[in-house]
Length: 270
Image (tube, rainbow, N blue to C red):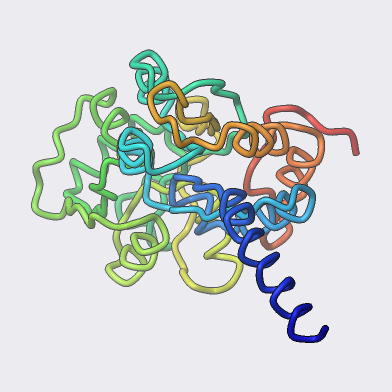
């Protein structure tokens, strides 16, 4: 009886394996949701509630959307509204929902040699260009880079001085490099506050809290009509969780150094 029981148990495990594998979702996302630590609390909470395992790829908005276009993701979480709308209009994304927002911030050495602290963002950028100050850009087609280029354009500034460099890296790496180089940079406030709170960087927040710097995040499912392997039930469960009361509460409560990193799309009750 014992050998037969073992065989039955093995057979049951083999049959269960494909079902478990089918529960694994792939989330393509921007680096800020990972670098800030937000996904480290959101994803385990979802998996505990649903039994669905999520593998997330923090690669920046441009790459995240490219991964989804190639049908290599089930869900996308990004922060470049115009790109997102185009992605949906082209038939690659469905059920796009607002998730949260935070703000971009202009950072620099605490001594602020270009004297931009407290200025309007356009004036701050013009002053950086006039001073030919060292500025480190993401340069990676991320949501942050897309926003940075739009801000330079709105300020009427060409970034053609020798001190302007593109790092081609994620947000965390750029913050570390800018800190070492004593350069200015643009960051989402979530990643900045996280890195600052744990002593990874000494960069100062110089320009912030302006409408032009608002940074909205959205989440959507990859269109199963384009990508038949998308796990519709599990993907929708993730969207419902992230934009529902529990996910929104987690976002509202998520802090570093006592400061909020993101603000939920749906205000939550204390």
